[in-house]
Length: 467
Ligand SMILES: Cc1cc2nc3c(=O)[nH]c(=O)nc-3n(C[C@H](O)[C@H](O)[C@H](O)COP(=O)(O)OP(=O)(O)OC[C@H]3O[C@@H](n4cnc5c(N)ncnc54)[C@H](O)[C@@H]3O)c2cc1C
Ligand SMILES: NC(=O)c1ccc[n+]([C@@H]2O[C@H](COP(=O)([O-])OP(=O)(O)OC[C@H]3O[C@@H](n4cnc5c(N)ncnc54)[C@H](O)[C@@H]3O)[C@@H](O)[C@H]2O)c1
Image (cartoon, rainbow, N blue to C red; front, side, top):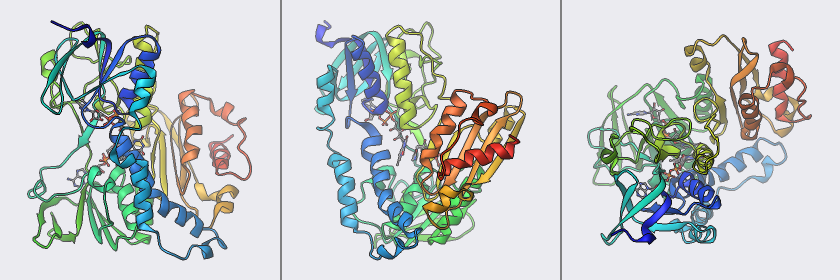
């Protein structure tokens, strides 16, 4: 018999940023809501993603910024206090303890159920706790999958036995390795390679299969980051593939490459992408395929199930945009959908803002040039050096980078933008607004950037467009 205590309007599986935000919205709208979490409330972002990675990047970034300013540079003479930097990371992750996040759930009235959840059929979720005790929950209105992703570990011989770091190992590190080798030069690999080097590693080598770092972004962005990495002694090898990994008895690890070269280090970070956490979720019981992302429509409703009015997916698990802010956006939209409002996701496919927190930063939103051309859009690509405006020069010496917009000439609106340069992340939201609201080039001309700010690149880009 089903206990009334186990029946909710909404059951959310996963208490990461996406799951927490759906639950916050539905409970505020009067729907009884349970969240099931098998690890820590807060998810990957709080403990092994955004928060510890950005905290570990910050000390090196601050020093680099000061070193670009004559006068201030002279004041930066010491080395980073690594123990203090790691202690701050520990504080930022609450020592991987979620007791600080749980009271919010209680305060707003969300029921937290600890354990591993799996679907057992439409609207039913079985939860198994750490003692093996199971409980079956039933949802009157919706089950929301918000289970996130896990690191992909490619099938390279020896890798599974090499005790390599994924994002978890590197964000939890207790000391800085003397030598680090990184497989994969995407978001995680690039950010963490530079963080570890700046925290004091003697040698960092990034092995990237594609032609340049940050393969999802404009090619110039990855090339500029690669150039900056070379200048600070981070070795980048592109177009290479690992064929074997060996962990030796002395603790060192060797990666053998397809060109016969070998790289030996003290730690190995695997940063080759993510896979959806849907393998043990009971997707097969509702006609979906385990291990695949849960594809959704514009209302975040899972597709591929007949007459689906109950199963939804938000955040990384739906594979649309693997970023915290996008998962939270989807959660807000879904909250409104479940409360009966006419809400739709307008941004997760084509208006996704993303920042790679390397130095230089790579900030982009919307389509890349390649994506725009693949869609057959008639475009003009306009670019201007980020360092070519007074606001960059007053910020320091050697501020370089590229600002680029992609204009759909038929509609005279921007469909993609990329800004590279040190500390330019705050520029990005201006482009996000322009793209999301489809502001015309003519109207942008009247949005005057302040002098002397780096935002003046907007003025130069519009002039280069012909305004
Ligand atoms: C190193 C690193 C740095 C990153 N930096 C950034 C950044 O700077 N900015 C940014 O926007 N994004 C960043 N990301 C991405 C960001 O972490 C993810 O997009 C975000 O965590 C996704 O949120 P989510 O709620 O969808 O999933 P998650 O945060 O993965 O949460 C899912 C939760 O579901 C739980 N769960 C899974 N399966 C079950 C189950 N069957 N039963 C019960 N519970 C379950 C998990 O334990 C987890 O707590 C980074 C990622 C990494 C790895
Ligand atoms: N600042 C941020 O917002 C931020 C930071 C970190 C992660 N994230 C999110 O997490 C996701 C995952 O990040 P990620 O870096 O793991 O994945 P990614 O997809 O960004 O990069 C993976 C890289 O590994 C390379 N690669 C794959 N297999 C390889 C192999 N066998 N050998 C060599 N190279 C190989 C790929 O070419 C690619 O460049 C990102 O897509 C992003 O959405 C965001």
